[in-house]
Length: 256
View 1: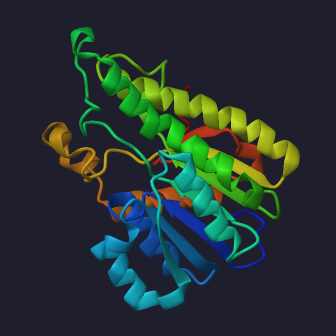
View 2: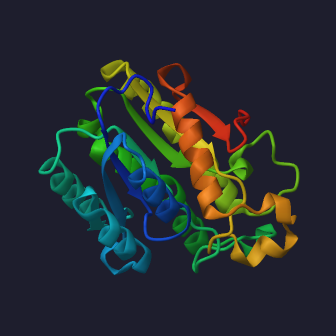
């Protein structure tokens, strides 16, 4: 299965949030493919990640590690300059950025637990950072078939919200979905071969979900490698005709 619909060359790819969990698994699987030219592995600690260091020893110059905190535009500006000096375009960008319970963000159970610091932290990482990543990489996505995919979450679906709770996380993922939908319209006008996707990877055994894993049935708690495989399959199966849509790991659409 091809990585990107109608892409005839080996792909330049970028994973943001690459140092652990799903992001690291995505880097590993992309580097194992013959149709991938190089992988830009971006995270706050890309050059200090043991997992990325192991991949670098195995794949050499095909893996380019870049330290970047996507919550800050100066870092994103520097990232874009770095990539632009290396290649003319990107064919695939995947954002795995997300926060649920790292202070000051928290998984609130009731209104009384809400505070401004938690709301701001959730929105900065879950909503603002992915769309600002797209903003700054935008010039590199205007040529050839290209896909920008960001990890959202089913709990960001407004119509699917039946349990309540997790105010900041739910709202910030819903905001991400709207931002991606809006960006897909603009990008398609400039590059009809572009695709923007919101993807729900399922509950995955990562640091983000760790405090809540005891409540997840074993068959519904996925390994990062499985989640990464599902994400790449979704990207391969959804091209420009699906731009601006929201999909779950099992290939089912998610209602807004």
